[in-house]
Length: 412
Image (cartoon, rainbow, N blue to C red; front, side):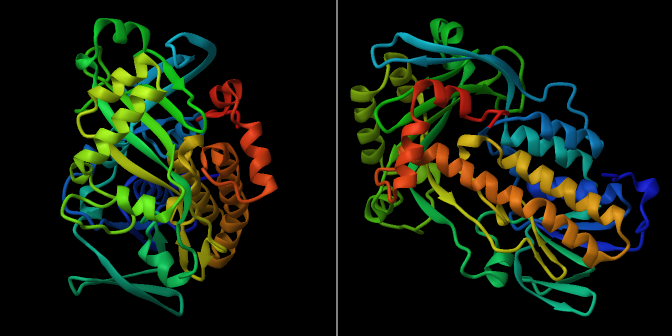
């Protein structure tokens, strides 16, 4: 796959509009610039995206894409982890596994990409209203009354994609039946014992039908020096009924948008109940981590699949096309691979439609496979198993050995 701008037949002749300016959109923008396309990115939010701090596990495929598009990752990309450990309810180490990886934060990855993308091609506070396709052109209309015309429109606007909703209104996120409590702890707020026994490792605690995992990531200012990092804490818990989910997502004023809730809006009694459950279910080590979370937040787990990634001159990439459950840790890598494959196909073919057909043939099956695989890994966390197939996967992937080996693993 060649995305070298010197070999591109389209240099300075084709224009792409990318909706969504986070990691998927930036990676796609850089890849298309590399092959000589005229690229503009439109991001709906107005503030700084890089302050988002969720932890991510990297994979070699991600670094391969970054290298090809000219983004250096040699310095301070994240925190190296070598060993995984599982703790029992009594606090004893029951299993270990050596699996070297690099963990970082969403914000650190965004920052890295944003620094490489030209400011004059990146616009914020640009909310897409609608779009329409003409012969060989796509026109995007924004809520501020402005428009943008291009040869290609790329939807990189995530799981709640406005573009996908217009193209495939039946393709909606499907709630998986469980949530994740998440939070971050500054390294300096850990005890010396925690800094030695927990912080350097990817750790697990596995109550029946639940899963806690923790690992170090880049710090508030995306720093990875000793004492300036953070510890990422995730606790997967069943919440099978929609009424249970809606209660968790309702703030103290009774507001509920039905999909998520801001970290500072989670009701104190919900957090108190979660911490009470931690007293009963978790190892002493993980209980102490839960207690140290300043603003734990709730992430409902969803699946998303689409029937097509290409609709004439509109392309869906990243979570706008397929959203896999987070157990695989491939969300960022999947988006980067989509962007690289799109640029590779466009760089190899003068005919736009031929290029897009090649891209879809390459990535459609891959995206669906990731979603299916993540469903298998997460089956045992579902409070209700709907089929014999789900029960099979629940038993297959719930052992300590399987969880340690398969979670965010490059081998899955």
